[in-house]
Amino acid sequence: MLHRSRHLRRTIPTFTVSACLALACIALPFGVVTTTAARPTGAATASDVFAKRGDNSLRVLHVQQLLIAAGIAVRGGADGAFGPGTETAVKQYQGQRGLPVNGVVDAPTAITLGILPPMAILAQGSSGKSVKKLQQQLMALSITVRGGADGAFGSSTSKAVQEFQRSRNLSATGVADAATAAILTEAADTAATSTPATPAATATDQLASFPVPATCRFWDTWGAPRSGGRKHEGVDIAAASGTAIFAVQDGRISRRQDDHKGSRGGNAIWLTAANGTYYFYGHLSSFAKGVGVGSPVRAGDVIGYVGSTGNALIPHLHLEIHPGGGRPVNPYPILKAASDC
Image 1 (cartoon, rainbow, N blue to C red):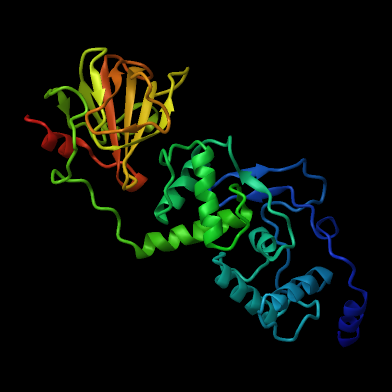
Image 2 (image 1 turned 120 degrees about the vertical axis):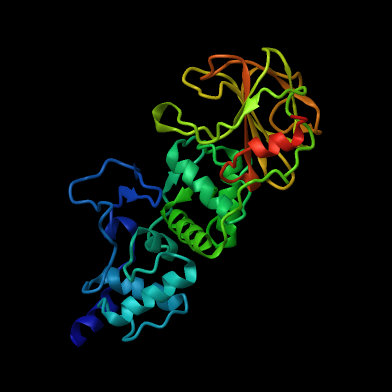
């Protein structure tokens, strides 16, 4: 073993990604798998790791050298043998970088060490449940995502990812690679266990303006079943088509959606207040003139008009309230308190 270790030190070649691992598929902490290239026969799969205890190779030697260069002591030195000393060093490195501490050099650890290049798994243009979970994780760490957890990876989500990456000394690319995803998931899970849940909204919360002209035609349907196994996450306010819709708080329009085939909200608008809370208005017939993304508004300003676009049978306003940009809360008691009903 001693003879081989010396031989490894003398003959180690320049390390390249292609020489060690052709990584074509990464398992995401968000519950999906994204393929970055056609996977050749024998290439690593999502269940493989880069190096683990019991391995003895140039690959392990390079890992050990990088750990030592990062200030992590490796018991036994860089000998190419992945034993308990190397496993302990890997765990120490993972803990310092906020990675899952498993003692194996998986893809996120290899990327953070600089062995593998960051490979985008979620970026601008991505959409769906994985993006929504990413956004929720960012907001759980008090990073503002303008528009909230809407499942659409746009420029605001990219900026939020950059903010997180800078806070963890990662390359601020604005895209979620395997390392960013793993560190973000670990941080959000830790925050969830150490931070009390946001309390439910109560009637003591205030709206600066009622969302439509005075009416008592709204009911508490929070949690009512909807198609596809969904539950109602807002309050419906009945009003004639074309009725003016008002900004309920001072803020800025953070997102606007035009009605399209398959949309549930139809013409919709997101109003975000200075504290990060956003208000979602759905089923509008049209938007007020000049109101678009980035428009500043004051409470009581007309921002649109009641309609029945999207998944709506009759004209009404669907209103959601997302404190701090997070999960929605029951808006009925808040709306009730702001009315004369």
